[in-house]
Length: 214
Image (cartoon, rainbow, N blue to C red; front, side):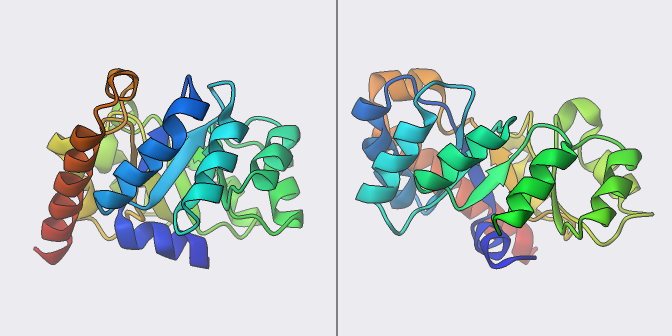
């Protein structure tokens, strides 16, 4: 794994952040995540102002590892990196985006959902892949099955991850980290439930630690 993936793996969970009002909420959210032991965020470009959120959080909380998610164009890669993103996450496997990010020496974790996409990943010397949507595709059982012919990859499952299944995923040596939005739901952010977000992060960290030490 690259050094960024190693840092992600140390924490074990990547909050998938969608902010409607980054000027109001970005810094408060970042501080709440860090306070809960999760100094990482994948800011999704599904929401307008993702670059603003990245810029505000990276300036106010430099110790936080920030990435950009749901990246679908090279222009978004440029905007993300210019505003503080240290890694790129894609929903699918786009070879143009992979090549572009690698030319810029930016770690990229493309989405995969089948053996053909795992196979293509070999051409680009990728080490970490996003498995999406994880639960809908068969969850950890499918990840284990695909690891048979492709044991060289570490996986970041995203989609359907919750406190209920976080431990099961985290216990597997195939998993780099899990991606999830359960600790950063829209309603929590809108209501400014920063203490609840911190509590969910602390609970997540405890679950991951117990699973990995079992």
